[in-house]
Image (cartoon, rainbow, N blue to C red; front, side):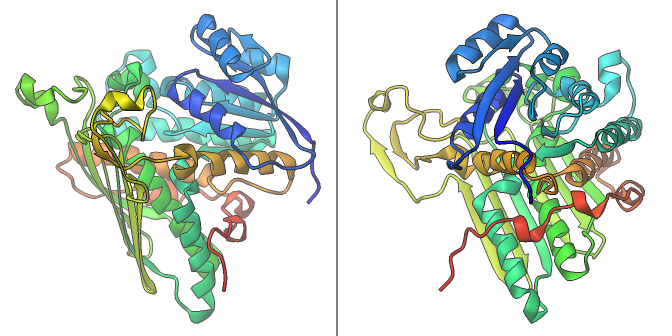
Length: 426
């Protein structure tokens, strides 16, 4: 495959947690001779924040708006890592500018009615959101841009290893994924906008359960492509969504960020068109920092991924202040006592592999992201149907009109041969 350029200009929208890990992950991509990555622009809701971010990460210029940045820089890769409410507008601007690779943080968008101060039931929110995302994805396709839906759980080494195993057992007529289970949890997001539906789009279901959901949807896509040449899509959704902490006495929330407007617990069940299942949980009730786990039961074995924490590293500190300003693992509230540090955490969480995929897609004209438009579409359909299900007593909601009813060109589906080979051979 021919390389389109060897000097890639990268722009970033957003200077919070997502913008920071985006910049750091690009800087950790394994060296490739002859390829230069330039942080050419950054924008934020406040120009001062963008300027500070530029100084911290060596970005060439700070801009007042996303559109101004696109016009001035003409980036090869545009990373949309801002608050959820701006995702769809920035996506449309990047598509209109025909940016070669657009990296869109999860979730893809929020219900547009929030920005218009409207109210609607969950079924209407789902329908309107899917209509808007459809138009946005049509614009991306028409522009010739490639969309990388930045679900980092797709890019963790364990998920890549599972995809490698699926390729390996194909010749034995194995490779059917039967049940997937995953958890993403901590004690409450530190993002100011998280507890504001008009900016975040929702709580634990929308912003935490989306992570293991991405892995589950991706692996069924890979399975279907290997076995039948077409991805396996989700068709039914049932969910429970609760706000646990705000119904408890004040003392119960001492070690958490108590959400006042969004859900802090969600459990979602996804049924795929082949009758297999995924059960995903997201919550803000983890008192000991982040907990990310993912498990796959298939017809050839079981793969349990303890993403964070895991016990590969163990540390005991008699006093927490001995660690100084070091963060041993994401959102760990104290370093005192026994902990399980996560060195190179951005790699463990998939961010480095994710940004490397963006770079490779910018360099190779015929390469498309492993996590692309189909995953963004199916993710939003599942999440919005999850809220509808919760409103209707957790009954199953059929989403096949959205998933099976919208075709995607096969070239934008993940290529199982490009998922990587993290497992060595004898």
